[in-house]
Image (cartoon, rainbow, N blue to C red):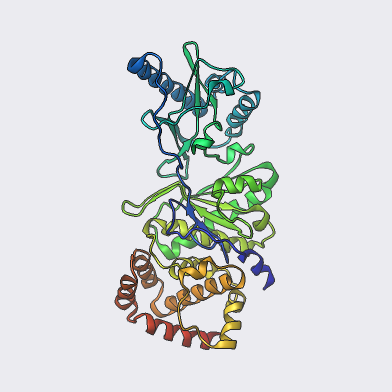
Length: 446
């Protein structure tokens, strides 16, 4: 039992419902849909007037657009010389070196798309040119958005803001920094390629990305990925992409960059993330399962498979899940799918629930969303109760009706809508559900 408790640790983020990026986290497994990564904090600011007025500004925008087009094309065609020609030759040696490493670190990554969009209407004030190693003739800080897609994984490209600062030297423009605008609230998004050479293991249903230092875990995850996607699809159905990108960070700093600096990564085994979600259109950008190497590496194969299937369930269901949906259904359903074919007996899945049941009797309420923001055994109990109530519903309704109920409840924006869904599909109100669930727990565990 202890082996399964270690990766149930605390992680308090992301209600699938929350924020603006999406991180579905692993608690007892993956726990909570995590945060959606924030786009950028700073709003645009009036820029300093450019020499030459509107005509010069138009020329500047044209030249930088062409610069970014050449840079993107060089990455797609693996032309290092052209790529480095976009970098300021008088920028800091460190920045030039990091840009060269960025290019080389992307060498194995299969890109279906890599492009930049420049928005001249959303600029921030650049720093004083005198703060650069060699002051340029002009600096400009328009908003730049990277759009990229992993081949064989992303059905739609994902977009991320890049905190790029450009310098003009004579008639030529260059990228001179990607960190100088942080104080203005515009930071550069960092992908796995910013943290080292990316190694890629393709599977029939996706890709696993990692680094030399964690290749063993990369290959373990790759061996499980196709079967895990198939297991989720068996329950949820085929109405999702069934393509997954798994990222195995090589360091704590990379994990935080991929998940969100504000996200509590200690104790989690994995997190499901996405860059943007539109539940109206069903559009999900950049869905990834991010493994925490330190926590996931020691797991047995059966435990790691549960983790993957839990997180993949969050990705499969994300386009159907609104912010107000109750966590007991979101996390209970992901746990149900994750444990479903694991062979792990219920008493090992829910030890805290069994202890509470024998000490105090059946629960009188369902776990609240607040319970999922607790820690330690209280958080474990919330997940175990949620898993058990969804397991009960699966036995009462069958999996097909359970999935229908998930669709209704995950799309509910009020307690009244949840009650209506239970009445329509389960034939019981909330009080009747709690009472029937309690009797089921006594039959199962007591």
